[in-house]
Length: 231
Image (cartoon, rainbow, N blue to C red; front, side):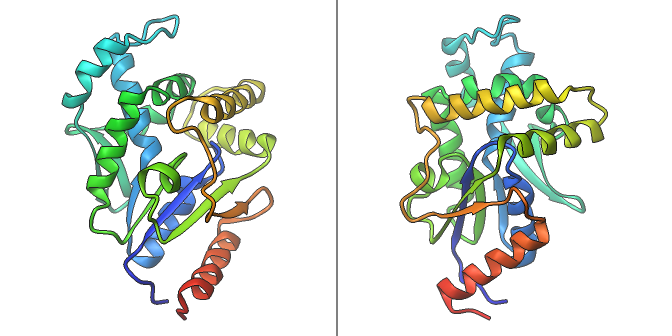
């Protein structure tokens, strides 16, 4: 299937499988995959490890602002796909823990953090032919993206997916805790002052509550064929 050099922006609620879907699209079409959520999680992990986030969850915003220019987050591709690095250290596993999930929304709500991540994403996606997932990609980061998708799913479905993923990585979690975290993140993401979660006017909604990844790929291939006239 031929596809032009475009930006595919995938926004939506947490745990809708945006990253898995975006990675599959990138592999299928030979696009670069940029995980905005991993960058926010990387900043959060850095802040946690350097005492910028206290045990009670308070964030030293001044210290974080001063640290941001020196936080070297990047992506590296390998046999297992793209992974997130902090300098030369792979942090892919650490940033997916519940501990980071519980802190990432208030960190990502800070304007200076969003500016840092937006700047890095624009730099990495400057040559187009990239698929980027997040909360405000089609609205704020790449408002000129040629294809915008907004993903959603029932909260219970998302919590179950997230719990299975975490249990598979050996992390002990309870469904009630994961569901509470999903709902809390929905509220924070939708109500923050800086770039709240929102659907772009020209975004196509994908509710994948009852869809497999294969069904989602069939859906987007049909959408691309209709939009760009490719076979």
